Image (cartoon, rainbow, N blue to C red; front, side, top):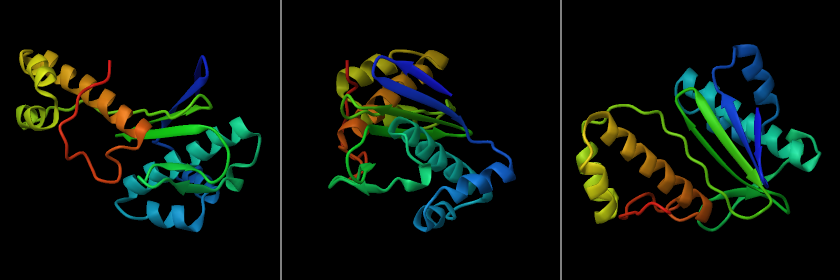
Length: 179
C-alpha cells in the first residue's frame, strides 16, 4: 500500500505473510540478503524477508525496473542506499508491521515502534533524551507518558535514520526530538 504525500511515498507493509508469499519474496533477494534474514527465529526470518522484498518492490516501482535488479550499498555511516543513482529511502519495522519511505527530495527517515509498557521508561528517558524533552515526557503520567515517550523516540529515530547519525555508532548519545 502506497500513501503518497507531495514527493514522498510511504508504504505500510504487513509482515504476517503466509509461507508461500515469504518464499516468493525470498526469490527477489540476493543470497546475502537471504543469509542475513536467516539469523533469528522463523518469525524473524519471515518479517525480514517480507520487509526486504517490499523495499525492493517499492524502489523498483519508482525506478521502473525489476525488484531483483536493484543493488544496494551503504554510506560511510552504515546507512543503506542504492548502488548508483536513485531515490532515498528508509525502512522500519516493529512487530508485524513495517514502513518504507521513498523520495527523490533528499535524505529521509522513518520509524515505527509497537507501543509496549516499559519498566525502565524513566531511566531511558533520563539517559537518552535532552533534559527539556525528558522533563516534558516525565511530567506526564500513565498512558500519556508512554505515548509521549514513543512519539519522541520515533521522531528521533527517524531523524537519525535520515541523517545516518547513530546508525554506525548506536544510540549512545543524548538526543533531542526535531521540531
